[in-house]
Image (tube, rainbow, N blue to C red; front, side, top):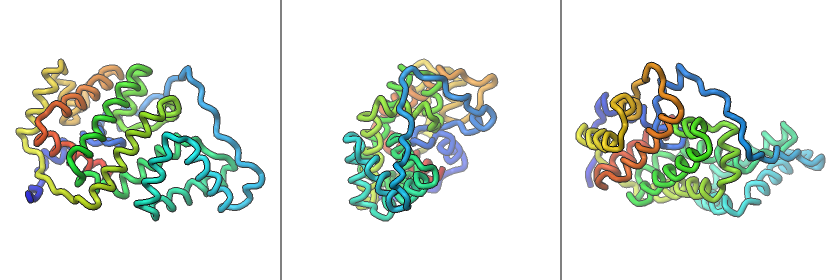
Length: 280
């Protein structure tokens, strides 16, 4: 079985700037110097968090109420079940945190908030395992991220840009509330990779400069400018910054180009992206 080669400084730089909170890519320098604008109002209204009933006078009762909320949506139920069955300590830790938050605030949050936090927490705690999963399982994560990006782009380019850069603002929770089957699929794909990686433990070679070159050529073929390619591959911050619709388009082009690469190249890039995003 091939062992991973030592990552060069250049390759590390490229992938640190490609990884994002939802395991896509990021130009972190751009977001650091250009904080995201407040999300634009959305037409679809989301029901406000429901207050915890006065009978929830203890942490245990608040915790139980949160668990009921987590499982009340059938689309998200398979995620929580898989998490509970395979990582019971992580599940209990999440539930304890959610329960304390509910007890302190005297209200429940939306299931969309709980799902987003669970994905973020599991990425940090177990994300390295996802990079060691079967190639098809790893690739499914990126295919579903592309589907989410496409759906968000149809609704709001600014929200799409925030998603690509790892944002999870209220606007994303509102989107999740109206696209739960899709969000549930994306979440379940990420968790399934973590579960599979725990047993598969596949090790892969680090992407080469030639792999990066193939990705850049694929992006150019999709019409991205040199400036846009540099922003998504090398993390160079354009001056002036790219508008939201171009960030959104570049992110979608990145995922589409990645999917079209030969499998050997693609899996090396995808696996390293998952590995590095687990550390963010």
